[in-house]
Length: 468
Ligand code: ADP
Image (cartoon, rainbow, N blue to C red):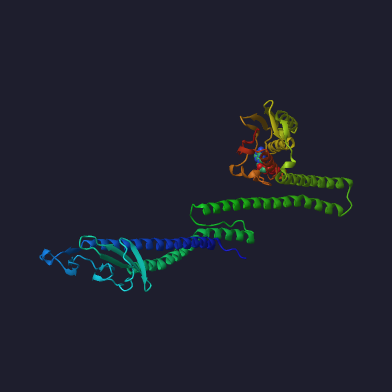
């Protein structure tokens, strides 16, 4: 089954949660409002009836009545008269109050359901309810106890209708409004999720393109921004940059290596074809063999170097490490190399006593030989080479200085690349692998090689490695 998009899933869960909240809100609204409503109706009913208690009075004779006062109703009752004040609320806010006799006879006031409640006995100070024609009514009775009023009851009746009307408006509003809110929130949520996840689509589109077209030059472009996805895109772009550089270096290496191998190979083949064209003298054969030997040595050197690179790159663990007496190693390499005396260059060295180091003896002496060979190769007639071994607090420094041709500023970083040769040194002697090998060896030991050089004056190459 196809996985649903993150955008859809976020919106789905968000909407589901919202619907749940809305349902809870509905229940809460209905429940609480119903409770409040019932209480309001009951309180209102009780209050109205209680207010009316004082509005009924008894008089022995009509002569006692102050006829100047605002009076409304007189009813003959027992041995006197009942006076019902005009403040008597027989119908207010759906609350009806009526005056009854013990036997249920209505003396004054209104009761919308008088027939239906005719058989409902009076209960003093207690709210009862009754359903008439599907509608709920509350009834509250109050016995009158003043002198002369014995046997009289006030009965209040309130309908639930008013409350239902109020309630239904509330329901109508919430039934329309809340789902609309959910709809709006989910559409908005979907839109926001789409916007927030848009950059991810761009990232995966670019990654797809790179995979399909094999083009590591492509970059993810999200426009300006500082959020997590922009940082992710930046990290991806950095990674593409590094991969591109690595692939480029690899491509360059393969193309250079095959080029370097092809030249001696063509020389060997041309030499063979030329020599075999006709019978040659022994001297000519010897010369031909010497050419072939030289070219083969070059090829074999190159192949060895390439194998060493591959081993250092892919299987560094194959080069073991041991405790080395660096003082002894550097001194013996320098003593041997001093014998070269190419271009009458003299080699001197200053080596600190008792320097130990944990590393690979073969690789370190190779590094030093490479640096000294370069100093000879690019040194001037009667020049000087100076090798120095010293230690800092936590580092070991091994430097080789010469007073030779020097290296131009812009070339100083490039000379560590494989097969790179500066213009002035394309003599055909070297292959451009010595320094990159030295650099690999430095990295193998957790350090690096730096160069300082002034064209025409000389160069200093320094190996810096941390000491354990
Ligand atoms: P190669 O010496 O075989 O050409 P390297 O990797 O040893 O290759 O050196 C790369 C380039 O760096 C050289 O071609 C040369 O131009 C420059 N170089 C290296 N060492 C020195 C030095 N001591 N003085 C001047 N240039 C140097």
